[in-house]
Image 1 (cartoon, helix red, strand yellow):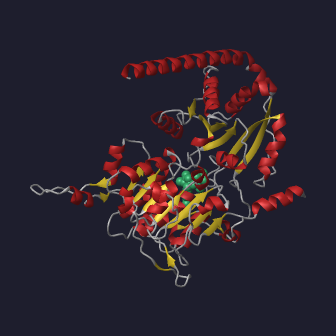
Image 2: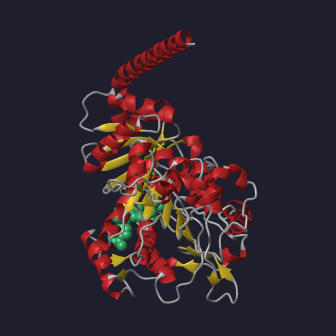
Length: 512
Ligand SMILES: Nc1ncnc2c1ncn2[C@@H]1O[C@H](COP(=O)(O)OP(=O)(O)OP(=O)(O)O)[C@@H](O)[C@H]1O
C-alpha cells in the first residue's frame, strides 16, 4: 500500500502541462504514402533509408509540427529507447527548412557525446541532401580550423577588389542550414568563430535532455537561449555577463507574430524540441529550457517504459567468480552482438583486459570508454557495427542513444543503481521493434534492490537465467592465471604512466 502511494506520488508530474500529455501510443504506424504533406523528395529519401512507414512517436511529432493542427509551441517528447526519436524531429525540421531561400543556420541539434552527434548527423544528412540542405557537425572530431572551413563560407574575393576587414566579416555566411553539435565545440564556435551566428535559428533540439541538463558545459544552454532570444527580454540576466560585449552583435533580432490559438500573444521564432527516454519532470530543471506553451508527448501511462520486445533476465553469481559467469554467458551467446556495462571506466578497462587473458576463445572483445582517444573509440565502434567485434565492454557515459544494428544482448556486469541507467543500458537492444535481452549479473544480496529498481518501470518479470556450475568449475584454473596476468598488466600500466609523468615534469622544469 505504502509502495503504491509512493509510486503514485512520484509519477504525477508537478507541472500542469505535463499532466495531460499526448499519448504517442495512441498513434498507429503510418505508411509514408498516407502521411499528410510529406515532400515526395523526402519520401524517396526515406525509402532509400529502408523506411516505409513512420513509427508512432514520429507520427505524433509530425502531427504537431507539420500535420493539420500544427501549432507554434515547444515540444517535450518522452519516448522509449529505440522508438525512433531522431527521425521524429529530423523529418519535420528538414521538411520545413526545405523551402528556405537563403542559406543560414536555422536548426541546431545538441547532443551530449561526439559519437551520438555523428550518428544523428548521418540521419539528417540522408534527408537533407534530398532537398538541397546542408548539415554540419561541430564536435571536435577534426581541428577547429577544418570545422570552421566546413561551417563558414568566406566571400569570394574578386581580383583587383580590396575588401576592408569589416566588409569581409559581413560577407561571411553559414555553409550549413542545420548544425549537429556537442556543447563544448558549440561554445568554441559561438565565442571564437567569425561569422558563426545563431541569429536565424528556428529550431533548437536538445536530445538526451536529462543528461544535457545535468551538465553545465560552460553555461551552453543559457548562452544559446540568450543568443536566440530577443534583446529586451532577458531570460538569464546573468548570461549577459557570460557573453562578452564583443558578442553583442550576435544577439538575435526576433521576429514576433501573433500566435494561433493564443490571441494577441506573441510567439518566439525559435521552436524547441526536447527529448529523452527518461525525460525529467523536475520543474526547476525544465525551467532552464524556457519552454513556450510546451506540449508534452509521452508513451503510455507510465513514466518509465522499457521497449516492448525487451526481455529482462537475472544471473545470480558467486562474488568470487563473477567474471567467470560473464565469460560463460558470453560463450552461450556466441555469434550475437553484446554490450557489457560496468559501473566505471576503471572497471571497464580491468574487466576487458581480464576477459582477453582467458586465451583464444573465439569471441572478439573490446573496450569502449571515454578514457580512450576518439580515433580508437571510433575504430572500435566501426568494428562493432560491422560485426568484426562481437562484444563491447563499456561504462554508461558513452552509450546513451547509441544505435548499433543487431545488438541482441545487453549485459549489466554491475547492477545499475537507478532505473534510468537500466533503461538507457537495456535500450541498446530491442530497438525499432526488434527483440532483445538484458541480463543483469547479481550477487544474492542485490536481488531485492534490483527488483525494486525494475518495479519503477512496472517490470515485475525478471526470471533467473541459470549458468551451470560445471562451466564455472572448468574455468577456475584459467581464471587464476588470467588474474595474475591482469595484476602484471596493471602494474606495468602504472609504471608506464609514472614514467610519462616524470618525463613531462622534467620537460616542464627545463623550459621554466
Ligand atoms: N520509421 C522507421 N522505420 C524503420 N526503422 C526506423 C524508423 N525510425 C527509426 N528507425 C530505426 O530505429 C532505430 C532507433 O531509432 P533512434 O536511434 O532514433 O531511437 P531513439 O528513440 O532515439 O533511441 P534512444 O532513446 O536510445 O536514443 C534506428 O536504427 C533507426 O534507423
